[in-house]
Length: 301
Ligand SMILES: O=C(O)CCC(=O)C(=O)O
Figure 1 (spheres, protein in one colour):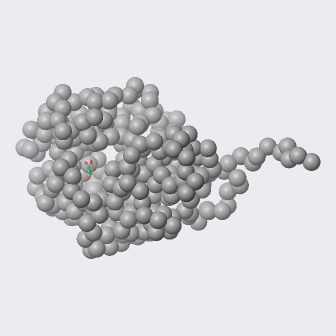
Figure 2 (cartoon, rainbow, N blue to C red; figure 1 turned 120 degrees about the vertical axis):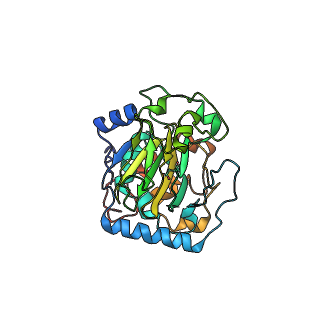
Figure 3 (cartoon, helix red, strand yellow; figure 1 turned 135 degrees about the vertical axis):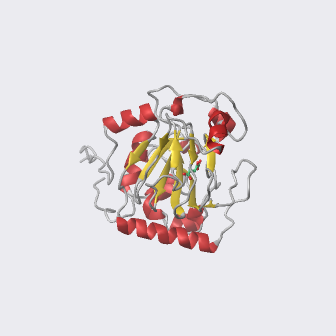
């Protein structure tokens, strides 16, 4: 007898964003998700930061476009140095929002560990991400984003001048008036050098475990830090047809330790990859349904 039963629906370990959250992201250009990670997860995250920094890995050659700050330790392609980031990248609470924003088609483009030490002046000027070519593209207001960053806060950034993330709500839809190779936004940087932040900007106050999601086109910078070293991860995401920022392909031994979902998020389709898979993956819903966490294996496919 032929099997005529329809396949069981895919059950995900993640939940999508609500319509209100999607509307908020579209209008303001960011989402502040509070308490996404637990105290215990934050503790493990801090251990991963310290281990990566102690290993002092030279994971990627310098590129002229990298903004250098003496008070910042920034380890790029950090996932190649530690397995400690995997649980965050594969976490249903983070995968769900990304699946919603990137239309079900999520690739990790970079994984960074950041420690922002004390500095009286702003730690990073106002800029957009992704370089001048991406900066000149604008999507319509109701479009899903091309790229999204997730900043995972692991230390307290609730006080003023604690290395707060700065952003201009709604700026993700605006092309800056001055365009340069570094994508700096000079009209805001001149006042920032005097410690001034425009009234319409937001100084983000984040607690350990919070996550901030924002697209490459959002105008953003980083406040001074006079409190304690600020520790975060920044993960950059795009669709599977985009190219990564801090790796070409992850080495086999890195992929081998990961869940099938996380491997897919690093653009790995195994040995039998077809070039068109990056545009039209045939099994994307199934591949993204369940990660390697405690819920692995419980979903029905
Ligand atoms: O450290 C931060 O809060 C933001 C870093 C940043 O501006 C960037 O990664 O583009």
